[in-house]
Image (cartoon, rainbow, N blue to C red; front, side, top):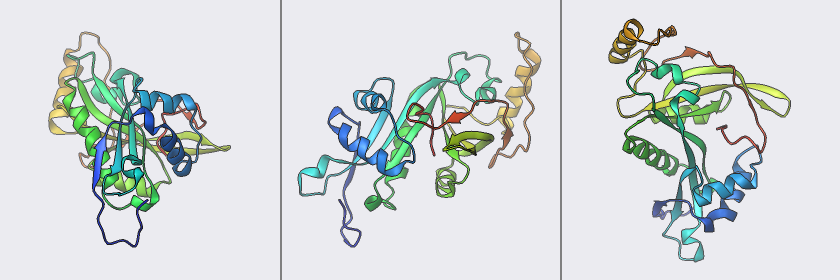
Length: 244
């Protein structure tokens, strides 16, 4: 691993996570997260079964670890209608097959922190989402007390979409969650001028006659919406849709 006292800046490269990363991927997750993930989750990641992932490696290392993971991000493409933010896209009734890229886990080993690796991994996610024509955004959950993660996603220009009360249940205690979104391919908060106009058009012309939810505190830079979804996350090894 990188010596924190070293003045040599490492050469970081990014690649898809592969089967040979299995052991290291499990080890890093165990060290970074307060929950234990099932073996099946890691097997799905390294084999690309329903999960899209990127790994960071330090190619400047002279030992056999030059291709060993020192950072990662795992994601899953889901239908927008199956997400907690489906209502943000209801004004776009011309597209019924919209998707979102959900960030499952993101991490960097301690000795490689503050080198921009996490930012680069998230940019890879955003770039991939933008390359999928029917994808409208990247989103994730952050537990309410994780201020460094909250600051990080705000710095990456993610929008705060809503707060989900008592979303997490960890070791017998409830915690709220913040839901952040990065819009791509024309996806945008309904509180933006164009999004709001589309919302109004959909409201009056929708053949389905569905009501459009009211948004509160509509500010483009920090849109906070009251949750209309009662889903909760009980954090255990079986639940990978948790970004704490």
